[in-house]
Image 1: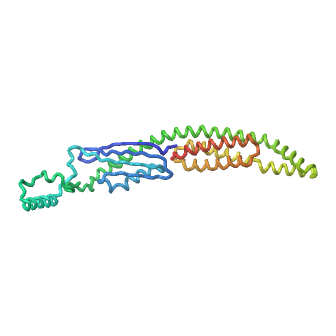
Image 2 (image 1 turned 180 degrees about the vertical axis):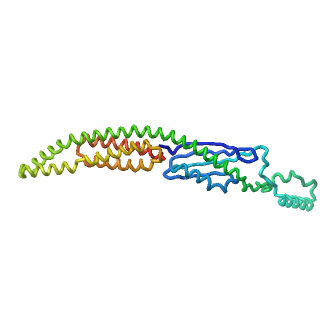
Length: 293
């Protein structure tokens, strides 16, 4: 079992003649479906589809934030250039203004320092093909670490849910025992009440038949049997290494349905109390499973 909460990071060499690294950080939290937020350097924009495919092959649920950074070596030439045409235009205008206003001094580089848009990044859309391999390797390594983190957290969640399933199994066993013991008492109470209301005006066979019918209507044996079956299924899913969050959530709905039916059908106070305790345990498991992949 894996949680949807985790963190992973990795850094690999660029993979070309220039020295440097590709750094990747991946973190995830719970989300019903896979929701990937991807941040890539501009030069890697063409490979966004490759990165998304790697993530989708490894993760099935969760809100995933993936950050990729390219860290070049100090020797790598800066990816900036000066707009010479814009600089010429500014210099020409300053010279014209100097002549018109008869100003002293010369037009020099100091005047160009604060010119907006004079410096612009050089087009870096064509990253070396070797960096694609390095990028995929870095993303895969970060996701592997993320998965390990999610697996550790998932084991903690599984341990807690196992304890609660065992508690539910004990409650279900107590329900079964109490249901069996209370059936005869329920039948006697119904017969006595019917005799009081009818004042023996109806024959004994009719009273017994009606009492049996009422007991059958309030019997919860089938619900308890199904409840125990669902709990066995839950125990099995908790030992799985697959993405089982949705299946556990579905089984919990079935468990909740059976427990609710026991509580509504039973007229036995102790049996109702056991059902209420069981509903509390189910709600605690449902809170936990919201973070299970």
